[in-house]
Image (cartoon, rainbow, N blue to C red; front, side):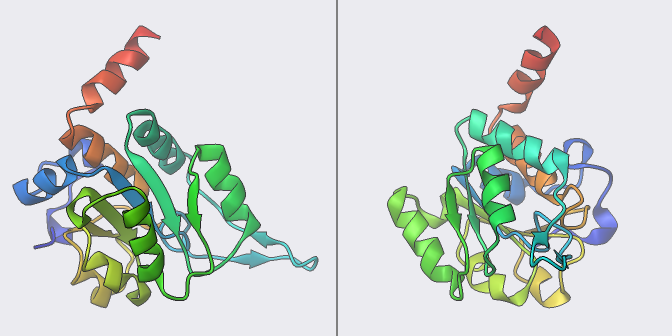
Length: 193
């Protein structure tokens, strides 16, 4: 059962509407898998006259990814497109498991699951389009972004308050860290710094 848009209040850290089932699922997560276009970005693709592809990423999403990795939760990327920009951003964030140009995302998902000896319930996935439905149907914590199509929302346990590329990923990284009881330690570390 997904949370309703009408129930959303603020960022993940201050939300009081997250169902117990979502919190329970988030507490089991050992790996977060992300789509790129429409999730890590707003879905826009800028091509210049030289053939370069430009994408815009949200800095707080990136910080959330780094926090997850620092606390021992893995992060991977599965995307249908291929872009050197994605490789660069993943490298900056410390994401080593990157699968690009995936025409069948389930194949990459199964490879990742086997490589890290994970069960479906230990994996969260954030997607935004119909190509993400097969993975959303498998994982323990299926998430979609606020501006995803209604068809995709029907397969999500949670819909973020924020749109893709605008803090949606950070909502979920914070949720996972809180559900695992790791958030207070993160805040304490920053207070001591």
